[in-house]
Length: 279
Ligand code: NAP
Image (cartoon, rainbow, N blue to C red; front, top):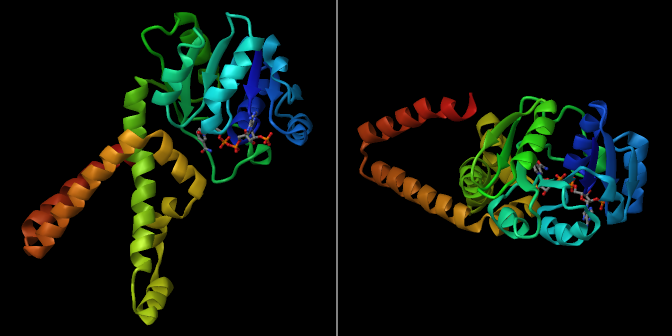
């Protein structure tokens, strides 16, 4: 199959590696000529260019640009495609993207590989990035079966585990397990910095160990990604934050009341629930 990739960065470049190793012919388009040259030299793609017209020969195109550019780039790309071309994207938020692209292109199915690293750009691309990782597909009632089947086949060949859900369900789910943690973790770091005694703050910084490393990791990550999550998944993240604030209030109330029995019950139930998420 001829497979196109628009946006040769971490995700696009990693897809290119694996699709080529499956025997597909991979056509890459990126913004910068230097990235196209690197992608050819590194082996992510068979051919690359900055012109969208290169993707006219593709049977399936993966849109892998930064999230804010997915819809504008698709709007420009479709002039170059034949109507049977299947489009899919890899954006980390689904509802606004599916809502905007579905009226523009019949053969479109939203997708989100739940895989990545802290790095970005073509040089960060890795082979086998998607193996044993969840890959969410978000077909809607009008999505043609052929688009679902073909994209599923490709995703399965990457070694990923496929999940289907509605775009809104996806956005609510990732809000709980990905976007809320970033905001909570950022708030934790900010709260620690509000310590007014410089000696205490310094002592806390010296004493911080594995617990703080775990809980502060995602709050200490790339600020642009955090802003994108908030911007593109605003309703779901606000809802999650409101619920989180409610849970914090409950914990504060129990501590104020010295209600150690109830507090222990709460912590016991979270202890029991955690493996359902991470094991
Ligand atoms: P990335 O490493 O920054 O790659 C994006 C690439 O898109 C850039 O390297 C850039 O290439 C290219 N680009 C920028 N503007 C473009 C344009 N107008 N036309 C064509 N190409 C353009 O980002 P990423 O982490 O791969 O993320 C890409 C997408 O994957 C995002 O939508 C994100 O939500 C999604 N995603 C990311 C992760 C993750 O953990 N990183 C996980 C799942 C999904 P140039 O070098 O040519 O400028």
